[in-house]
Length: 372
Image (cartoon, rainbow, N blue to C red; front, side, top):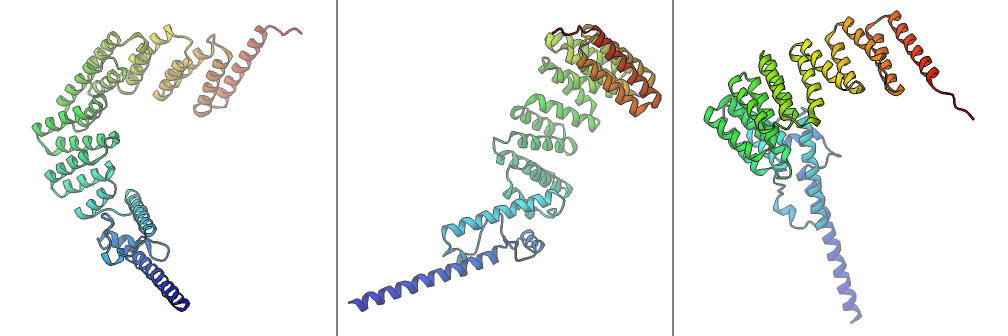
């Protein structure tokens, strides 16, 4: 009886050893077949196999014979290696190392990164370059349906790409249809601003004007809408319409937005319109808010950028003679000194330093001594 027990134990040990050897062999085979391990091989060769479809990374499939005896831990490890490899391939492609060259490769990419608008848009661009505009539309719809509802920014990117496609390759009907769909699924304010850019860049001014008016009508309580429309009108050499929009904005916006709206309108005038109009707006704002150093700083920056040194120095001189707390005056003197170090000469730099010392001396004289 004892011999029977020993014989059974011996057989059991042999079976366990055989099973372990088989599992180890299968793990080696799996690693070799999948190509997810980079340590012992050439990364580029493995990537090339993936690109050519020799390794089905997108589906994560393996031959049945290599799956039969894998343990749960081994399967989990293989899955992690595949996911990591896909991420690395996508990173390489984004970095310009590898570009998909056919639809099959793009399919692998969108399956591996279904929430990436970058991959979907690249797929659309590839199809358009091949003259397959209808297929590009289908990919856009697939992307909208596939990307998670949590990734609204990614969906928004695809909607914009689709609108851009219809704007360039579609007709009025298809463009309007996609635009209306996007308006019902995206942030309308954000979409209108982006579509305004698209129409402006493609010189479809009539459509751009309609979008600009719609933006101001729907979001008249948002200063950014008015600022964007002012910029558009000025870039179209239509200052009358831009100033009309500014006047309307001051009537439509709550009082708390007036300073921001005015200062931004002045910036837009400096950059795209009439600098004198920008100065006029800033002077009016500063007359009502003379202690706002942030507004003085904006004004100074615009004069410096405009390039007229005489005007810039005159404005700096006004600033350093304001009656403000020492901390704010220090900011203005430092800004003046930095300007002269960059645009002036040694004499101008020393002049600013001297004026700063004089201000400090006056400030000390007006400060009452502390008695013990």
